[in-house]
Length: 84
Image (cartoon, rainbow, N blue to C red):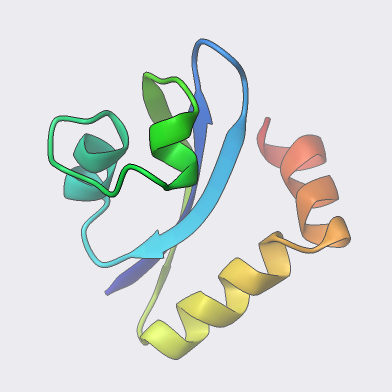
């Protein structure tokens, strides 16, 4: 299974939209328990991060498509209205 998720920083309120096959390890990476690249959005913005929304898909292609939808204006409005 593949997951599309929205993570939110507790300290700043910033949001991150991504997709993964393992949300638990991805959250650890966001919170710097596991190594991550130092130039990334999550590394530069403060945590701790929590996953506030997730959807499951059978294929990576479906997950990537939904991730792109959530990153559009209408997708971000959906996140504001329904999720957060």
